[in-house]
Image (cartoon, rainbow, N blue to C red; front, side, top):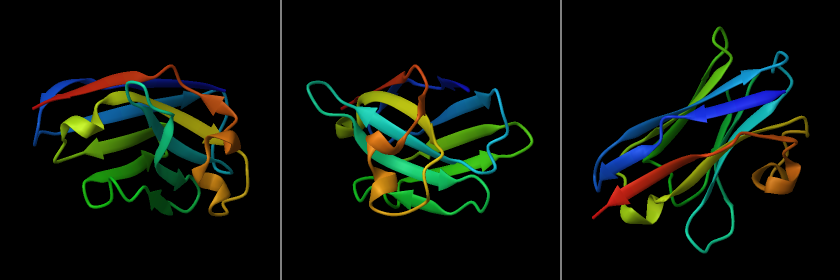
Length: 126
């Protein structure tokens, strides 16, 4: 399984970005997929997750209402649409995949994820 994240960049506060995570190596119908981020000097934290088969989603409170996670089955690609960005969103964003059961709160933890992409940097200027 390989995950390739892209779409990061520099954006002003209030702006938007869309991250993509292209998955290859197998079909992901039985998987959960997630986005995590790691800001400067911070631990890697959960951002959002989607259950590939059903499209069910979960969000961290800090991004709820601003970020939207989605997937395109035909393209084997997951997206994170990020709106109303603020400097606190500055981080390296990682996509990840898990074969674990879709159970909270376990699915919110990075230890539940088996595969990780390389990360893409998002910088939000004030």
